[in-house]
Every structure is written in C-alpha cells, then in structure tokens.
Amino acid sequence: MRWTDTIDIAIELEEAHPDADNVHLRFTDLHKWVCALPGFEDDPEASNEKILEAIQMAWIDERED
Image (tube, rainbow, N blue to C red; front, side, top):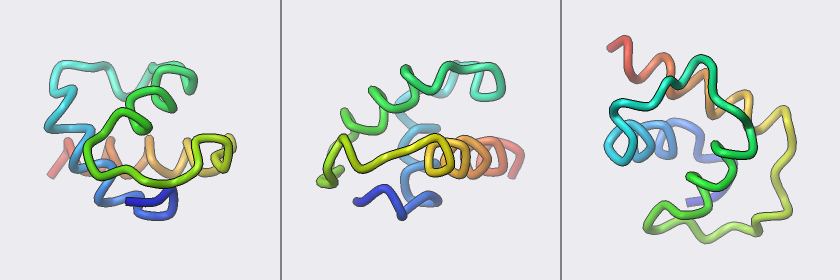
C-alpha cells in the first residue's frame, strides 16, 4: 500500500484499531499507525496533512458502513 491507497488503508486501520476514536485522533498517531500496517511500503516522509486528512475521512466513512 501507498499513501494514495486511502480506502485500503482505512480498511486496514479499522481492523487494526477498531476501538480508536478516529474522529479526534492526532495526525502523529495516524501517521505512526499507517506506517506500521502490514503491506504499507511507501516512504514515511511522503505524507502530509492533506493525505492524512483524506485517510482519516476514509476511515470515518469505513466505520459508518
């Protein structure tokens, strides 16, 4: 997975952190959790606030489904 795979990342985050408050989380925690996902192979330094926000929104949508 890469930073642009927001839906796949959101699915994996929901499986790895089902009890996390994904609405009020810190981007530093989100960044750490994404980098720790199995199959995540992108450069940790290649993320930014816009990417992390997109991942967070996808995760929120994933939980609502």
